[in-house]
Image (cartoon, rainbow, N blue to C red; front, side):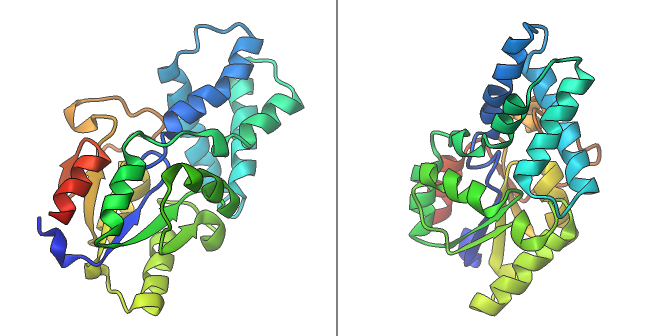
Length: 240
């Protein structure tokens, strides 16, 4: 793949740059410990989260992400017969700023910034990403969130919004944009519907039968143009 053919890299953030699975798992710990439920393993919790979150985002596309998380926590506790409190629900809904970055994200973005324009296409609100960006240490050229668009990926409207705005800002066409993401469900499926070139940052090792984690399972998997196990490997390859 010739990375010199692209001017802009569009990134998913949560799962690609931010370790949202660790963040989500950590955010569920208070209610799990409150109920002494050691049977709720990380795998079970993340799988449950994936279904609840995608359902909420599809049903309520204009709802803010903090409210989505609030509803997810309430539904999770109900489905798993857990006692909760308003404080536990609220703390979970406000947990995004505490989700950590992957260890290689900041260095990789700094390398890529030297050659490409960097764009965020994320399923959170503006304040959530602003808080997360302090872990990433780079100034993105454009930031497009679900709050801007009024829907959540994999809704094609999110990609259409990005295309329209990058066209206005830089005269960019789809062929100029390379989409970089971990999630097949949220990103690669809709990106390939637009015939975009994509890079799969396969942090879950799904290409080697890994775990789907906090991402909804995709039965008919799209074919990314290239796969890397981490972001720094992609960055070093893309700039050389």
